[in-house]
Structures are given as structure tokens and as C-alpha cells.
Amino acid sequence: METKERQQELKKLLVTTYFQVYTEKEMTLKKLWIILRIN
Image 1 (cartoon, rainbow, N blue to C red):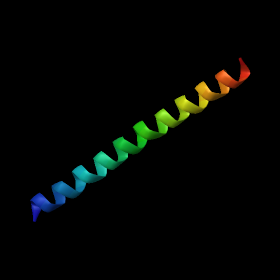
Image 2 (image 1 turned 45 degrees about the vertical axis):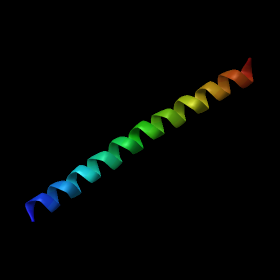
Image 3 (image 1 turned 60 degrees about the vertical axis):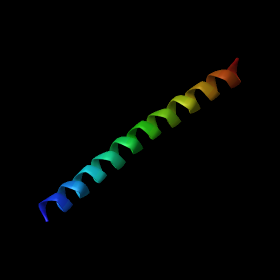
Image 4 (image 1 turned 90 degrees about the vertical axis):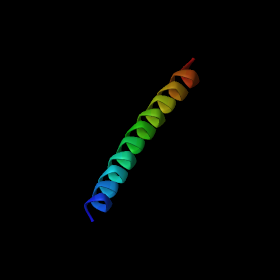
């Protein structure tokens, strides 16, 4: 039972981390795109 809960917590952490990284990449790409369009 405890192992299942820990797996759940790990999954949450993984998803959160993945989402944060993905969002950061998205923002960086958008900034780059804006800079490229200006130049």
C-alpha cells in the first residue's frame, strides 16, 4: 500500500517537473521567435 502511494507521489513530481520544463521551453521558443521576427 505504501509503495503504491509513493509511486503516485513520484508520478506527480515527474509530471510537474516535465510540465515546468516544457513550459520554460515554450517560453524560450516564443521569445526566440519574436526576436527573429523583429530582426
